[in-house]
Structure formats: C-alpha cells, structure tokens
Length: 320
Ligand SMILES: NC(=O)c1ccc[n+]([C@@H]2O[C@H](COP(=O)([O-])OP(=O)(O)OC[C@H]3O[C@@H](n4cnc5c(N)ncnc54)[C@H](OP(=O)(O)O)[C@@H]3O)[C@@H](O)[C@H]2O)c1
Ligand SMILES: *[C@@H]1O[C@H](CO)[C@@H](O)[C@H](O)[C@H]1NC(C)=O
Ligand SMILES: *[C@@H]1O[C@H](CO)[C@@H](O)[C@H](O)[C@H]1NC(C)=O
Image (cartoon, rainbow, N blue to C red; front, top):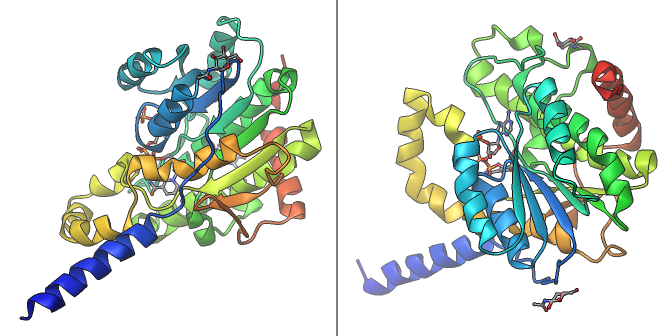
C-alpha cells in the first residue's frame, strides 16, 4: 500500500482525535482566598479539576468515599495549596449529613465554588442506595442535592458563589418518571445491563442539569452544569466488571482512544464553569467543550418539579 495513504490516514485520525478532544479552558485566575469544595476528587476528572484549581491557589476541600485513594490526591494538593479531605459516601444520606458536620469542624467560613463531580454509571445489576433509592438517582442526584442544600449557608457567605454540576450528554437517554423514580419496574428486566441501567444513569444526569437550573431561583446562587466529553476514567468500572463487556471493551480500546479525552482534557469544561467571570457565566446553563449548549428534555417546569420532589423526599435530612 502506498506510504502516502498510510500517512494520510494517520494524519486524519490524529486530526480527528484533536477535534474529538477539543474544548480548552483558557481562563487562569489567582484563586487565593477562594474555597473550592469538590466531590469525587480522588480519581478521574475530579482529581484533575482539583489539582488545576489548586495550582491557582484556591483552598481545596475534597470529599471522597475512598479516603485511601483520596489521601494520595490530598498529598499532591498540599504541595500546591491549602487542602483538606472529608469522607463522603453519597449513596448514604446519613454520610452526607455527617460529611457536612465534618466540614463545619474545619472552620472554613465560606465556599465559593461547589463542584458536584462524583458519579456512578451503569451498574450491571439493579442496585440501590442505603435508603433504597435506585443507585444512580440516589447517588448522582439525591446525595448531591442534599449535600448542596446543607452547604447553602456557606455558599451564601461567599460573594458570587456558584454551583457546578458535572452532568453528561447521557441525559439524552433519560426518561424521567416521578411515579417510578427508582426505575423499579425495570429492576428484574433482562435488558437492565444494556438498556435500563443507562436510562437510569441518564435520569440522574438530567437531574444534575435540572438541579443547576433551579438553584438560583431558590437560593440566589448561580448554578451551571456540563458534559465533560467522553473521558478515559474509571467510570466504566461497573461495565468492565462484566466479563463479556470487558472483552468487547478491550477490543475497541484503540478506536476508543481516538474518540476520548484524557482526564486533564475531560476537566476543561468543569474548569470553564468554575473560572468563567461571574457575569458571563450563564445561570442554569449547560456547557460542553467549554461552550454553552442546549440540553434535551430540560425545562423550568421539570426543574421545579424535581426540586419539590427532592426536598419532599429529603425532609427528614433537611431538618436540623
Ligand atoms: N468519563 C466520562 O466519559 C464521563 C462522561 C460524562 C460524564 N461524566 C461524569 O463525570 C463525573 C466524574 O466521573 P469520572 O469519569 O471521573 O469517573 P471515575 O473515575 O469513576 O470517578 C468517579 C468519582 O465518583 C466517586 N463516587 C462514586 N460513587 C460515590 C459515592 N457513593 N460517594 C462518593 N463518591 C462516589 C468515585 O469515588 P471512589 O473512587 O471512592 O469510588 C470517584 O471519585 C461523573 O459525575 C460522571 O457521571 C463522565
Ligand atoms: C495572588 O493574590 C494574593 C493576594 O490576593 C497574593 O498574595 C499572591 O501573591 C498572588 N499570587 C500570584 C501568583 O500572583
Ligand atoms: C424510591 O425508593 C425510596 C426508598 O425505598 C422510596 O422512599 C421512594 O418513595 C421511591 N420512590 C418512588 C417514586 O417509587
């Protein structure tokens, strides 16, 4: 085969890779005196986000479930800035409450940027949280919703604070049904591992978008959400736990590489949302590749409904 063809294909694939991994946050700020609170920062996109914001001098609080993995990140952060770790399991509402109690003990007066980044995707069997909610809705949305509500007093202390929810383009697979928020009708379906788990993930990610749309109306805090891109992280851990899907995954890895972002590339849109000038940040906006985009299925009425639904379910945890 002609060498130019091979060269041509290689260049094409490389350009495709650059295009697919695009979206760079060009904003650099001196964040000295600012406080960032970020969940799920012990690995993946969250870790890279925390390190970048740490480099800019913010005080960083990482909230992690696996604190052994978290400690390694904390050590790295401490070389850059002032940083703290608290334990947080979003799949247990009591743990969420406890983590806020632990945060109080740090005597940090305010939070400028709250980044709800942690997430779980596509468990191969139907799973639930400690309080029996479907795992993805319970963790990705409800846990973060409670955390945010409990941290609102700190966000209010800071001038021009913001909420950044790491959502996903996967919200397009959602089919949000308040009559069956737990997707329990699909719990025993044979299609759970390949269909309904992604629908439930999509639901939870749509909730992340809706939550960010409603927060300024409720609390006067600017909110935004984002799709980080397709990023090579541990998020597929549930999927690759399945032996067959694991083989499929390994086979497509070279192609997968072309279309996916590194963790640092994957952190760019979160950074854009965290660093964008306050006046320019689109309130309730959904970002992708560092630009504002239009999400699907999201509207004010649904955002309002989710808010009412969530506060109702969380009533016992929201009381002092
Ligand atoms: N990767 C992608 O292509 C992609 C695409 C769209 C959206 N996203 C979103 O990006 C965010 C970050 O994910 P990632 O890709 O960086 O995946 P990751 O490498 O798997 O990181 C997920 C993080 O969430 C934490 N987490 C999971 N369950 C938790 C729980 N119950 N309590 C507390 N923390 C929990 C994990 O902590 P442990 O290590 O302790 O389990 C980990 O720190 C997620 O919200 C995800 O939905 C990712
Ligand atoms: C950032 O700002 C603080 C005070 O606001 C200042 O002390 C520090 O030197 C600045 N850092 C850089 C790298 O400019
Ligand atoms: C989802 O499950 C939780 C926990 O069992 C329950 O409190 C809630 O009512 C369920 N929601 C729906 C709409 O089925």
